[in-house]
Image 1: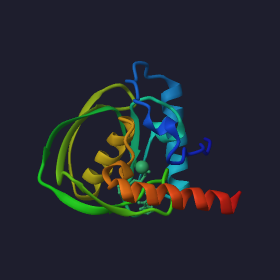
Image 2: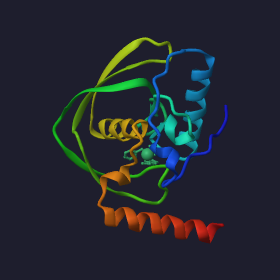
Image 3: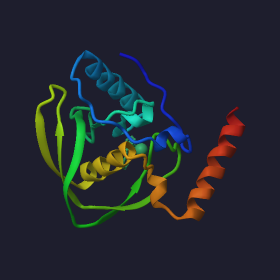
Length: 167
Ligand code: K1U
Ligand code: ZN
C-alpha cells in the first residue's frame, strides 16, 4: 500500500471531470487500497480519486468511529434526493477551512463495487453529506464552490499566505 499526495485547492486538476471505470482488475483494487490508507492517515472520512490526481469515478467513504466501515463506490450516480440539511464541511484538499454547506438530507445512489457488481444505497445524515461532497469532486466541484465569491477569495488568500509561510 502507499500514501498518495492530495491535490490542494485551487489546483486546476481538482476541476477535471472523472471518467467511468471500465476495467475491474488489480489496479483498481490497488487504487482503492492506497486511497483508504491515504484517507485514514490524513485523517478524513472520505476521498475521491480526483483528489489524488486520478480522474476515474471512484470514491471511498468511512464515517464510522473506528475505521470499521470502508465503502467503495465506483461509477456512482445519484438517483434521488430529498429534504435539506445544512452542516459544517471540511475537505482534505482545503486544509484548515470549514464552512456550512446545504445538502440533501437523504440520497439514493447506484454504483458498482470492486468486482464490477451493481449496488445501490439509500443514505442519510453524515453519510449522505459525504457522498454528495465526494460526488462533487468527481464532477470537478470543491465544497468552497458552494460558498460566496467573497468567502472563496478569502480562503484562496488564507491558503496562499499559509503556503508562503511554510515554504
Ligand atoms: O473529500 C474530502 O476531502 C474528505 C472530507 C469529507 C467530508 C468531511 C465533512 C463533510 C463532508 C465531507 C474530510 O474527511 S475532511 C476531514 C473530516 O471531516 C474529519 C476528519 C477526521 C475525523 C472526522 C472528520
Ligand atoms: Zn473534499
